Length: 350
Ligand SMILES: [Mn+2]
Image (cartoon, rainbow, N blue to C red):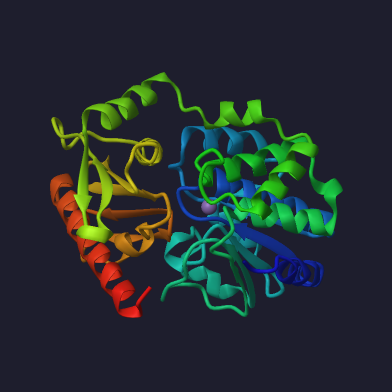
């Protein structure tokens, strides 16, 4: 676990000495990316700086769009084009809930900033933006947790009831409603956010997805799930796979696939993968794990799949296979992963 005071001190020094602050989350923003960005915007404003949140995607989960539209003015949410016209040589870039240049709407234009801060809880890779101010805590539940802690250390009064609710929603999303990755720090932050007026009812409402979506998710989970026993002997684990087996080209929202994978973790499965088309030619995978199986490692090491994330939550996409091919590839990869893991354990004598 990292010490959040490192990033808190860095921001307290870098924000006031910059001209403007630009805050960017990952493409296809979710509640964690948006909420942590809103928190950083509020922090920058408190420190006296003009701060902008840059979102260029038109595609995002229904509820995230609602929040975004509702608060766009208040928190200066702008698109890429406007952002590019506003950047000057003393501008500061903060990436939140993301660290890779191929997953942000600014793309390679991140190079136009002399100073970049990264606040994230996802694995770094070769495409991680290079900066000395990289704060990646893989043990943190979410970027919202890190930002909430940073705000609490700087000035708790920045946390309005609305901001506290947004940040708690970000944590709720990335912990599958407080079931995964909740550490003592997470619990402390949750308590503090509730003390600042975050409302669990508001969060339930934000995270509920609506009847039509629920029916599609239910159909995947109940009628289309296969639980495989992978690995061998001691390394054997149950792994759940779901995809639409009767109409394999059916399209889904990314959030529907994510929720389906989340729900499958309430079975005996140690890990779950949901697979489906999200556009007519792109297949998206949502991977979730109770902990033992590193779904980020699985999804980022399959040839032909473009994947990443963290140990318990990861995603991938491809446009060169069928959903059944993808299921087979993942299954084979998990099989090998479990065998290797077992072997290295035996060799270690653990
Ligand atoms: Mn996140």
